[in-house]
Length: 163
Image (cartoon, rainbow, N blue to C red; front, top):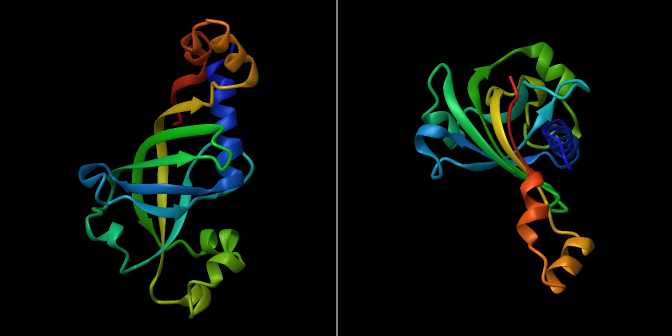
């Protein structure tokens, strides 16, 4: 039996490795959803989650000082799926920019860390629904032998608080 803690831990592990999410504002989802690269600060399994973006990005047009936001995530191997809800704010914190800056981020900003269009989005996760892929060779064999695949899948989802 898989516990909520194991499912949550798998989510953070895969998010650190894969990092691409579909991020948007809850009020305008799904039309505001955009692919973004998640940046985690430190090794702990918690937020905030940071996103580098441009001041002219569509997601900023509807963002108030602090808004409810949502992102969906699928790991590269389709082992973990998640929908995460939280609060998002703009940030211009230079110390955070310095900590998270890397060559992939730099490729998007001609002015480097001082690019006038550079802005950070801070996403503070509140809660999530996380699914682990319940399919396996064993569950496939069970299905072929007349077993019920729902029995294996029921332990593969967690509704958790991330705050």
